[in-house]
Image (cartoon, rainbow, N blue to C red; front, side, top):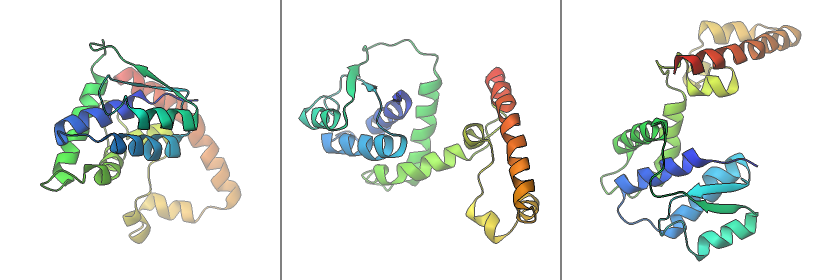
Length: 182
């Protein structure tokens, strides 16, 4: 139902820089765990022509979940956002992976969480807040309550529902403003 070009692009670029030999099993597991199990089965995915993407394991995965795989051309025209994101993701991974660089796939979730919850100057918001409409509540905030967290605890169910509806109405405006600032 969805297409997830960016996660696969980020995955492939990160692999290229972090590990010279990519195994087909790693690619299949990544797609299964980080795309299908997280977001649902896509109608299709777009990958490059690399060997880790075109093999019998990948064909079995496509057949098992009923989606198609398309090739991208070798030289695609883009606006640079995917490349900028890939560079950021690779830099985050370089900071947290071990020296052998073989555990990057275990650390990518933490790197993406850090990216999603970090304030971006270009959009004047966090990616998390633009998707979900609220800022993330970090575990630290539940241990050391902030003013916002304390106010939310004191709300009645009715007041909380009213506040959430107001936040949803403002979300479209915030997304539009963020898009205009790019």
